[in-house]
Image (tube, rainbow over all chains, first blue to last red; front, side, top):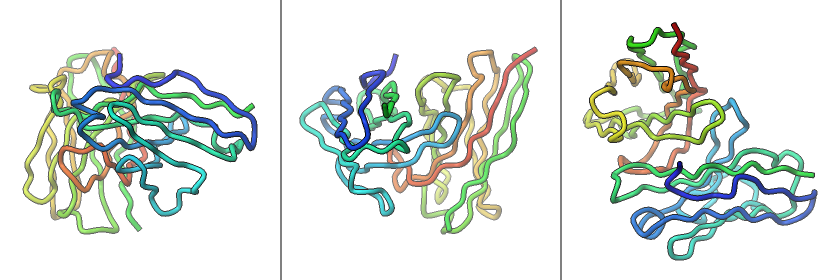
Amino acid sequence: QSVLTQPPSASGTPGQRVTISCSGTRSNIGDNYVYWYQQVPGTAPKLLIYRNNQRPSGVPDRFSGSKSGTSASLAISGLRSEDESDYYCAAWDDFLSDVAFGGGTKLTVL
Amino acid sequence: QVQLVQSGAEVIKPGASVKVFCKASGYTFTRYTMHWVRQAPGQSLEWMGWINAGDGHTDYSQKFQGRIIITRDTSASTVYMELRRLTSEDTALYFCARSNDDASSWYDYWGQGTLVTVSS
């Protein structure tokens, strides 16, 4: 059971906007930055969003992150078939002194 | 370019230990921290611990305390993760991941992963 809560699945059609939520507590999301990763199963995760809403160079601006209180969201606009992946949120947890990951959301592009 | 290259897949008997390495290149090794994250089949990511490549300081997840040792060899720009007393629940893909900070989930580069299978 993961410390951060994500929906197990999400879906959308090409061109649509999809949002993936990540819920935590004050000790993780509330007091720390949130990070988002994209992963094709069996390969290494890729950093999509850092410090809540910043995009590394090379990540399309179709991807955006936000945070409010103890929740965070990843939005993907202009959905494309290559966006079909697993998405994970992460944050440091001050209470656990541990990195908290979400359970992951499998995005399907219909 | 930054690269993290990990050692190859391992098959380990229950009760034994495994040592995985992560060789870094393309950046100043001692300026970053290396974390280890694992992923069991069909499961989420799980943080294991980190080592500050500069001063060698380490911190481990409570879950692995007493079973994990992370070390580094600055002359070889390589980090090692040893996990002891393996059980079938340790079967997973193990990743090293570079970070700017110690207590952080900000990983900008990842190794390709090392599959560790625990089986008799």
